[in-house]
Structures are given as structure tokens and as C-alpha cells.
Length: 481
Image 1 (cartoon, rainbow, N blue to C red):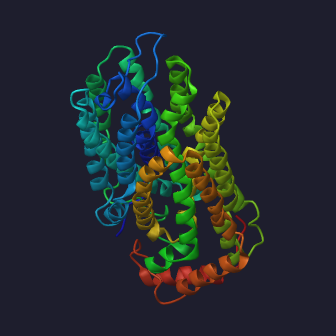
Image 2: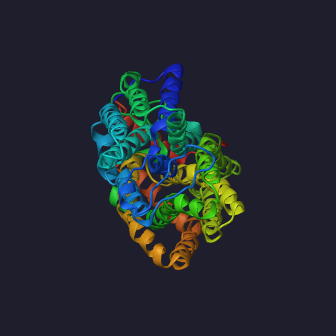
Image 3: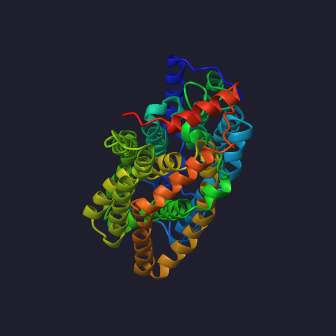
């Protein structure tokens, strides 16, 4: 399929639109701790409690709830998180075959409907919370995944661009902080969500400025070097890198999801007054606002590590360096998640502050590093499908969140200690990237496939010419970056 070049100004407009959409709506459901606080004040599911849940009308309030109410909220959040990426495999193929416009429009419609359903939630009709969170989950992830290919707008800084657009979605968790401020100011929950639905509807008309199907991989419209590698998707998915990545990605993301689940009840047990609980809840949202400034750092580090020692290296060593670049950022992130999760063992305000700092660093980085790794390690044609498959697997496994919550209700330290051990196990992913033998085997397989008759350049009109050009590049001595 041919594609006309995208001009500079249009390229930046597309990227900034995708950035803003991800910033506002990409991960709204991960602001659950803030929304749960608002819903408790509204008395949602308070009929499950024997005690009355008081609303915050003055500084003399008490922050109350009950186990049955917390379990219901945890169940809803578990369902929403599970569905966040469960259709990922279908979404990956949807982007690959139906294209960008269809995926974006359907995701935007789900967001609009989700906010309208959330506006219907009340003490008398709490069941609206289920469709609201499900639609916000599905629509947000669909819009986020649609924006990942915007990194192809800047081929030389692809890792940084993907990290930015991947990481800023965590800032959308702070959207419910503004919802809380609106409700505290006297605006009804229904009217506040009508405004959010109107904002979400703007994602539909701006789709017209984007390519209908996809963003080309390279500016010249031709896939070169490893973009031409016609490896079967099965080989990428069943590789050692794929397995260790799935393990690392699931455990670190699952730890952040569990932290969000326990945060509300954790600060309730620590806070002596409702105002103190409100401060902790607000800081949770504020930490999300810093995410846009954190998200470029992993991708920038990967681009820097990838390019710092390339001069004079052979083509094989250059490719090895590119694949190894995510190792250090992945290891640092795993350590940050471990510190964050260990804070749940302590019931002091200092532990809350430290955990929020770690959450601020980890939440945008886990997606940013993960997507950049997949883009660097595997052929570009596999990117959307692999991200979709991984998302589906992680979402299905995320259903373990609710059994873990119930386990922690009976054996808190045992349940949390198990997760700490799993975080340590996930270090196998960055460590496997340190193996020169394995990475050279991967490069050899890519180059063998690239030199075979299976080379294809689907974006070019002169296939034979491009085949010869690519094979000739392999035989040329490497040039400095």
C-alpha cells in the first residue's frame, strides 16, 4: 500500500493531538483511588454497610466505609482493569487491517458513552458504575493503542516518541481529581460527567487530519533494514525475549494495579481524620500530573544508550546494542516498583509519601519502556499485533487481582510478600538482554531472513529495486550514527 509523505506541520499536529488525547483519556480508570473516594462520599454502595458513610461537609468528618463496600469497589476495578487490554489481540489486528480511523472513532464513542453512564451513578442507582468503568476502560485503551504508531512520525527518535505517547496516559488518572474538585464545588456528578463526555467527543472530528489506515514506518515510505524482515509472528511471540518480557510486564504492571487497589483502604487505616485521608488521596492524583515530565525519560535513555557507542561497530554489534538498550531502564523500573510495593508493609505517613514518589516514576515508565522494548526488539510489522496479544494476556491474568485482594484480607503480609518475591523474579527480563550469545543469534536470524528471497517492501512500487538496495546495504561497511 502506498502512502503520501506526511508534512512537517501535519506530523506535529497529529503527534500533539495524540499526546493530548492520551494525557486526558488513555488511562482514566487508573485514577480509581480518587474516584472511589468521591463515590464513597456520594454513598455509593453504602447500603452494604451496617454503619453510615458520612460525607465530607466539614473538617470534622470521619472517613468511614466497610469491608463489603471495599470488596464491591475492588471487584468493579478488577473487572475494568481486566477489560482494559483483554481485547488487545483483536485491537492489534483491527489496527493492522481496518486501520487508524475506524479504531479511533469506535474508541471515542465508547469514552463518550462511559462518561454519560458515570453521570447516571447515584446512591439509588449504583449499578451504572459497572458499564461506566467498562466503557471507559475499553475506550481509553483503544485510543491509547491507536496513538502508539505516532512514534513512527519521528523515525530517528522513535523510542523517545513512543515513550512520551505511552507514558503520558498515566496522567489521565488525575482526571478524577478534577471531578472531585467539581463535586466539592457543588457541581453534581451528572453535570460534571456531561462536560467530560463533551470533551471526549472532540476525539472524533480530529481524526480527519490523520492517515486513514496507518502511519508509515519511515519518511521515505519504504521499509529498510530490519523493517523488511519477514519473520513469522509466531517466531517473535514464542521467543525467549517475548516470554521474559511478558513475565516482566505483567508482574510490574500488576504490582501497580494492586497498589491502586489497596491505596484507598491503606490510607484509611493510616489517617486519623478525613482531612488527612483527603490530602493523601489528592497527592495520589497530583503524582499523576507529573507523569508527562517523567514519561520521555525512559525512551530518551534508551536512545542515548543505543547511540552512545555505535561508531566503528559492525552492523551486528549495532543491532545488539539497540536490543540491549532497554536493559538498564527496565532494571531501574523494577527496583522502583519493589520500593513502592514494600511501602504497603508500613502504616506511616512517610511510607505513603515515599510510595507516591515511586508511583509517580513507575506508572508512566512501565508502559513506555515496554512498548519501546517491543518496537526495538521485534520487526515493525509485528508491533501492533504483539502489543495487542501481550495486552490480552496481561488483562486476563489481571483477574487475579480480586483473589489476591481476598487473600490479603485474611493474610495481608503473606499476600504482599508473595508479590514482592515475584517482582524480584521479573528481573530475569533485563538480565537476559545482557547475553551477547543470545542477542547475536537473534541478529543472525534477522540477517539470514533479510538476505533471502522473502524480502518484501510493501510500501514501494518497485519491489525488485528495493530488494537489491536493501541487500546491498547489508554488504556495505557500517557508517557512524
